[in-house]
Length: 247
Image (cartoon, rainbow, N blue to C red; front, side, top):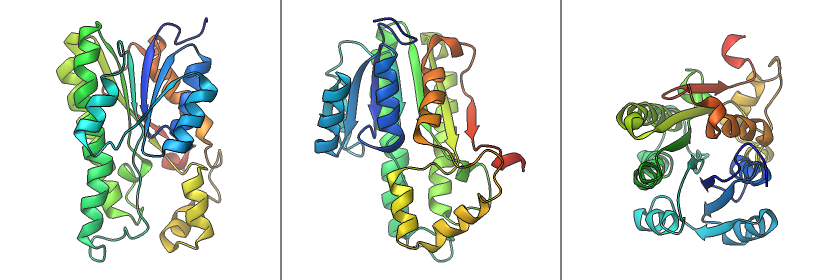
């Protein structure tokens, strides 16, 4: 199969839904062999079957899960560390329960660290590769009411830049995507539940010049970063905010 990722092997965490699922579909269509990692076994297996990939039930907060899943790959060219998210209980630092800190940092930061930690040796053995992590516009803009989530996504930027510098000599690139609001199932669920913090964010998008993003929009950026077309980029943060950061 020809395509922008022909002959490459990609692992995608958080692959059963949302941006991760859109990325898995696009990568497979562009010729990559895809390994899908997620805790949602039913959706993951169904997606893997539809794109011709392999599914591995993986809790990214458990290092042995990640090591076992990535160890199934014959080689690894691409890691998309998409698993993560916020919780409705997040909020201003003076109000949020510190239990939210533990849950958020374990999923977003520790989960990303586990994935990168076990991807790097596989990529180095293969002569290099591309790591794509997921930050958020919440880490770039100060208005977001989720202070713990914002902090976690900021940590991912720092981790990505450190990895980029450390492993460039091994031919490994690492870049982060920082999406704004994206129309995923989780966002729709939060809106439907009348979440006050989500309303603060969505109200700010009413006059957003290019509208709210779709999962496919972000997957297209991940494809560019994963492909050899972006070989001059490493240690960068691409803000996929549809103009929010400039208007």
